[in-house]
Image (tube, rainbow, N blue to C red):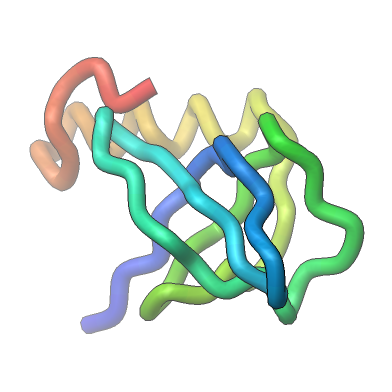
Length: 77
């Protein structure tokens, strides 16, 4: 089973890279598959790469559902 999760871009780096956060965890991700990202955008992250952008409402709804089933720690938003 593969898991993709919504994360928020916190900093844009050089070379199609960015820092992204979920649940207080920040990690460097690849952004080459999504154009024109900005700090604050939400993306779906899978195996270290942003796959697509999503709106904040959709991201928050998914994060709430993941918290409810215990897939991520509480207060991930």
